[in-house]
Length: 520
Ligand code: DHE
Image 1 (tube, rainbow, N blue to C red):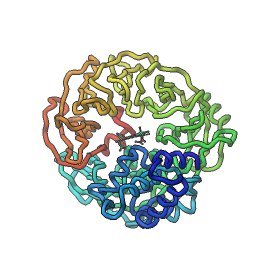
Image 2: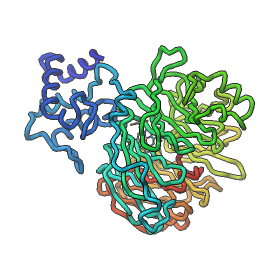
Image 3: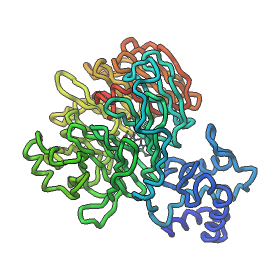
């Protein structure tokens, strides 16, 4: 770690007399100028954590620009009047240097971080508004770190509130659709009441989190962390910590980042992807796990009891793999998942009942399986996935695992959406150049039937349908962006709401009913 820090500083050459001296100088500037908001240990405060893991997608040059000029629509001021350019460069290098040791963030730290904004036990009985509470959209505006709650019939905002810095991944809804949970890259989990339109409670479950999942019974929030290497289970009622599970391989020797956690309501479990060890985990959340076994096939019971690694509350079943897998798609029955291989050229099918890989799918061009969706074609269940490095969508038969078709698109895409009440799937070319268009694919012919460009020259991506599938809502990813509502049958624009880089939007009903056309 020290060598890496030294290498980063050496890269500055003329700026530093010696790496250690530069480090000390940067540390002093940090303490004087930054620690008050970002924490003396860089783990965050009112400002976000300043660690390379949390700043992952920001290049050092961009970090220096933010330090110099501030960040639009946040409380981050510019320091160009206070610090010399070389001091700003040093600071940028400093915050991109990993911490010397894994920060401690266990039950005590998690419990101490919990902040109540309203009483979780005293919630109003009915919504504060007349709109259909199951047809609300929750829109994450990543441009200025806000969330808008939108009436899904009139497309009018009901509330807009500041979120934690850098929310990532889909928010998760309680089974009745009343509460929604968010996670920020800094590990803050927020519980929001969609009836009262207010934040109830927040807890910091990790230093660098990946995503969250909510158990099918709505009682447990699971948090996947890169820093530290943990899976954290929170009580969904008041976000108090229930258990911290350290991510280690079966021998206990290798620790692993937790890439992601997914709910598998039909199995009464969470499925956990591990970044650094060739295992995936199934964690059972019921208070009395043996009850879970009833109803599953014998091979499943056998595989599970043999593989159980950790007993007591939240027992962990380890499924051994040939290599770590990431970025999971689940079939509608949650019997199989498809994960991405490390080389990004294959999908590996793991059967969760028997607990082992059963097939491999040739998928060159880095499939983005996490954005995969399911639909019926010619009476058979298919999945479609975009590719991050290829202008194509792959359509895969969910019984035979054969690639039925590769649909060429104008560029690599990121997100994909469908709905059970429409025959069309909407794809973006988020990673392409240009990336301002959307392709509409007919699931009957598997052909592109229409291309839409909501705002020429501005990135278009991430679609979500109303609960009845009649309208599709599209994001224009720009500080002067918009949420554009289209008629999902005629593809005519119906309404346009200005928004600050609306990254994702999520319809309550589609999420809680586990619509095959959307992420869960
Ligand atoms: Fe995401 C979902 C991982 C970069 C926006 N992203 C997810 C999920 C995972 C994931 C595992 C599913 C979590 C869930 O919903 O519970 N994302 C990753 C990465 O590993 C990657 C490539 C690198 C990283 O920085 O972590 C990555 N993601 C991005 C972005 O750069 C995006 C475009 C902008 C951003 O906000 O960071 C981005 N990711 C999203 C969004 C979702 C998401 C909007 C939710 C999609 C949905 O509809 O459910």
